[in-house]
Length: 546
Image (cartoon, rainbow, N blue to C red):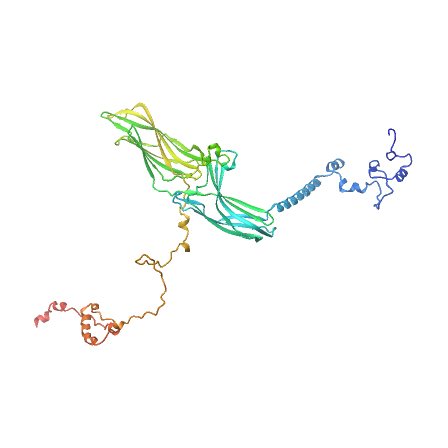
């Protein structure tokens, strides 16, 4: 009601102590009491205080003065220590919370792959390559915090992923990507208990030689992945995705020589190129241009080289196929759209550095230069994937020659005719990775027991049936009796031995056989001087006198 005063908010005219003691104090009455008031009664046991102190709740941490208020009340106090202390306590609290969160965020199982095989390189062409061997160990690391983990599913897949960058439908993942599973390893047939520590699971796979190498071109991409997936009995999943780089290397051979003819002139170009070219590094090119001089009776016409330009072109081609949902855009299933792109991955020009010889028959211009591929252009090696991706390279050489005229008597009087030609030559380049040692896995691997054939080899009967080797189980074979052997007279080599043998024949003929004593030879006397020498000796002086 207007004009009515509430007695709880009006102070009486009596003494201050009586009014306070007679009126009960409620929870919201503290806003009307002054600092100098003394409360004489209490609802519960409280500690008495004296003087002009504040109540206990004013001393509680909730009523503590803030830093700004304390700075205003005590302007001359050094607050830097209190500020640093507050910061350190806050930082310590945050670090403890961060450590606790990190411990909770660490998974109990961590998967890792230890590759034991050399880099994956397929040597040779896809038609005759033996492939690349890939072997390693899949390591399962169980943390000490987890203690023990029970896995009910654990497998590893090796997949090939082919991506086209010009799909039929740009927003369809099935038109853009095709994934093929090469192999799968399933390590578990029942639940597996793994304690804290490291546990290894070996695996190996032989990449076939016809598979395309890993590449990332302007129109398509070929990738290989090793996917590992494990699941515990509580539903936790642990995955690992490891990319693999499969390369192809062609072994270098003899240099290639090519000849180009430029009618209606007599010019002929000869180029010598290496058999293989690598994406990084230079390769030499030898060029010879012959037929540059056409001599007449009194004058001659010559072609002089003014400029030489070369470039390396990369031609990419891919066939983009569509999924069943978008096959109607290209006229049905089994059809695709062909995309082609050509780019220059290396170029240069030369205005000098060749030798010109007009004195030989027909004349000749020879030069040698180094060409290279620019690695910053991300070149792709030659390949041909089953999905329609194909990459090839060409070396294009352009020569600008100018015609000039001079008399045969004085070849220094040169007169340009104003005619010029551009001679263009194109050669195929085999761009491949470096082969390194060039040893395939089957050549450096020692033989295994399965590769060793059965020994000794079997024998074939006349009726083309293979005989079987069996052990002899009969009675022991009798040994030969040497006493029953006949004497061989052909063993007598010299006359002395023949004479001695003739003397002993009568005694031996009475015997039945040949004994071991007969084989022993008697001690031969020292050799006597030949009779021919005694006869031819000349008589001495004394003997002639007699």
